[in-house]
Image (tube, rainbow, N blue to C red):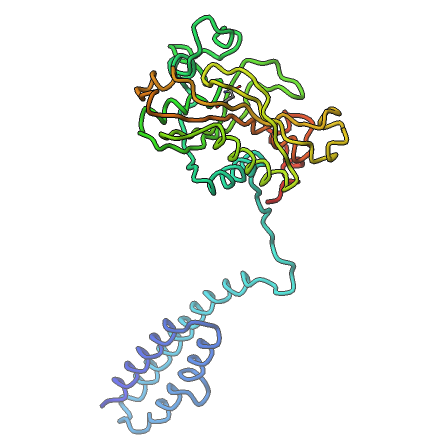
Length: 337
Ligand code: DAH
């Protein structure tokens, strides 16, 4: 093998080593191996005496050219790591922290209530917020002359339809799609053109419950609601049903829970009555079953409607409903899940 061929092979090997280097240390070792004082190129140079005199000059030139080229190659490769070194974090600096998000208190309450009823076999269902008269009113046995139908009570949509004013519409949507047995919970936004103040908003939230089967009784409703009240307010909670009226239930009731804040001694929260109003409920009116094509002789059911905003306000001591939709982080950060 001629020395010229050896030089060529060494140069190629050195180039490959620059490319393969993964760190500054790799690179320094490779450079030393090839270009160091007793490195491979200098070794080869030592063998120049083996050449005939006529070729010595040419070999010296080839050797210099190779050294120059490789020195440049090592420098270029070193720049790659010099850049990386600048980016290396200083391990003594405090870590960069990202602010952690939290679930909105309304979402937390929705999940909590869904969890409670989930254990009783209720699945979460949904329906559109842009509704029609049939699902929001007519099928719920709300007659055309009912005050809830007044234009001042519901947002009408341009081009027809309305923004649902109650999640009860999901009762109808669900029964249209499914056959009993049904046990669903329908949380969501509802809208009414109310003037905004500390306890009223045009956009608020409800959770609707619906159970339908061949044998569902008022006692089932009561036991479900008692379970809910105890999970929500503690084992000491008691409930009472006050007769009321809703067009889509018969009989209808409002449920109060014993005031857990004062042990019924009387306080600001229960307005000294010892009881807190929590939801509306009742047994499904046969007219509603007829609207969705269920045989009212065969099926029974109950429904209830919980005001979600009110539940958050009650349990967290929030005194202004506007806080729940204002997206003020100073307020929201207090609700760490
Ligand atoms: N939809 C009623 C409202 O917005 C609340 C309600 C009452 C829902 C009784 C029900 C119920 O399902 O049975 O005022």
